[in-house]
Amino acid sequence: MATTLYVAMDKKNDSRYDLGSVLCMQVVEKHLPTGAVHVQVCTRRDRPAFLAGTPSLELEGALHEGFDALMRLQDMALEHARSAQPERRAAKATNGPPREPLAASARPDADTLAGMWDSAIDEGPDGEGEDETRKLNSDDLVRAESARKAAADAARAQPANPPSIESVKD
Image 1 (cartoon, rainbow, N blue to C red):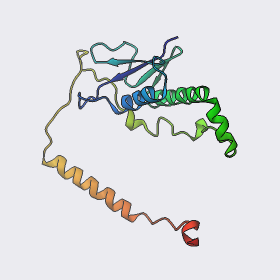
Image 2: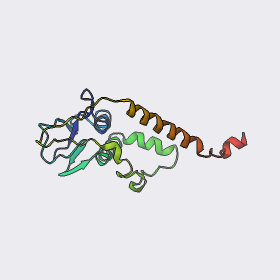
Image 3: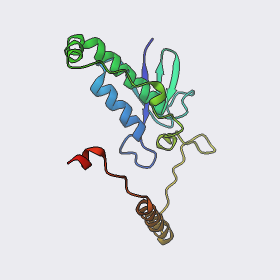
Image 4: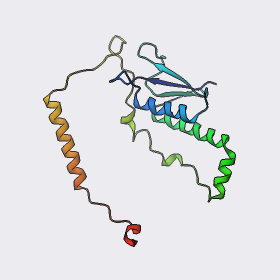
């Protein structure tokens, strides 16, 4: 069964892909063999009906969206690397004990990173895309400055980490 990665352009800047799509495409381009994953660029007008947002990965009949799509692609890349370079793995095994793969429970869950994947394809009331563009005003600037100041104050209020054992020995 074919593996397809659905990607889209950023909603706010149509000259680049959305962040999740960029991350997934980098894994496909750099770590998977050519032709292993078909990348399909979707627009608001020509997207498949079952697609709610991007990035989405159709793998073995199941649809994985957002962070889950990225994790599946990374798993595919790891399997490809393991199968493509067995002699390299053997050489590394002689340098020390083998490391266990990262447990699924140690990965951040999709809820933790949900805000990063807000790339759903918007639809207006008529089914067409609706671009929300407005000019920034002085109120927006004041809000941004106060949020920045509050974040800086909160960072300063946090206690400094105690020195590590290594730095004490020096």
